[in-house]
Image (cartoon, rainbow, N blue to C red; front, side, top):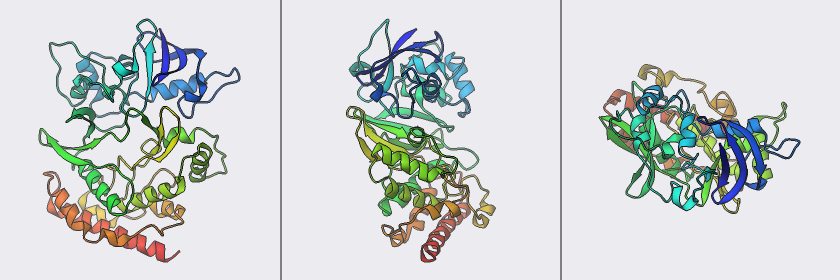
Length: 384
């Protein structure tokens, strides 16, 4: 089937996609190379690399490792998550790319999720709600949401909001998001605001989309792919070089702020797909780093309570294997005022007290562990 890859209203390329799949078999015509997704290279014929564009397109699918995805697909009568991409025309709430069927051409104004309502059927299925005796509407941004934890997009009071769950036994991630945002707000680090809601007695974090119909998130992974990495070049330096070549403003300063926050909150899952930069989807101007988001894998959430305070050499991503090594990449702390975190343990305890899965002992130990991280960072800065 023939589709036009669109960037908002801009025609980017004509694609052949195998019927009933999301596999791009041919790039028929390239119309607008400057509007190609970031990180897709051109081959010797001047067309986008077919492997690159398939990797980008398939990367929009819900991962096969998503919690309860098999049951959700069975509930919806779909054999694989990949098929969901074309069923919603590839639309998402992260960027402005989509595929326009040539046989039945559509208008951006009528289909984009930023300005139009969307079905909650897929989101409900992903949350384990059985859909019976009705025709499912698959036009939903939930078809193109990444990540392993249970999540769904929902319109709440006119706002596009992402609702995301946690993992057993503590279901701590939603509360971690709120605590991480509290840390970053106090330290003047740009971040997304989170709150916690409960559905069927389970906690879920809620945040509003930080892009709109004119802007889009480009992940660090795709920024990283704009240049070939030298084997002798550290990933950190390579990423900064890519940002510099793209004219992304204040890259090092904002990256250092993110690494500092991740050190403090002990984030072990800051991979290249959950940070990045924002650009104007119409002018292609880079506006700056995205506010920090997706910090749920923090505060020793996977550890037994008895092990939290004994943890050393905390695991980190994406540039070093431990935070103790990664924090050394930050060379300027003149912006940092750790006194702004004074008394934050009381706020943490208040946040964690709302959970029926986290007892007072675990909450107190989490608070103590964070205070230890502040002391460790102070020691690191003083020793420089």
